[in-house]
Image (cartoon, rainbow, N blue to C red):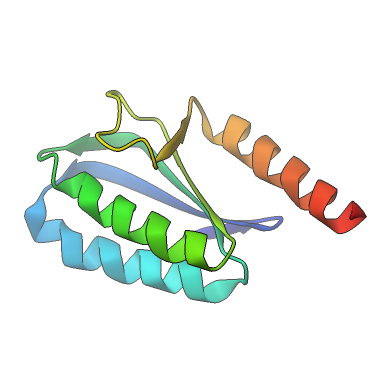
Length: 109
């Protein structure tokens, strides 16, 4: 987990299965608690998601983050997410640029 400007970035690697979901939820909860509103990017470029239910962890995190006026962006997905609420960008750099630009626009209001 790292802090990049206003964004908290989680970089995951390996195979993500149901055994890993509690650990993933714990890290997402920590990321959400670091900053308000939480702007969280999860880089999945090094991950294989074994089950569609794995995306449920991200949907739950999205809903929690959205209630706090934050943003959750996934990067590096090899498949389309099963839920349109999940925002996906092609790369970590693209997601960082988007959220940093959004942060600047919010400050200028």
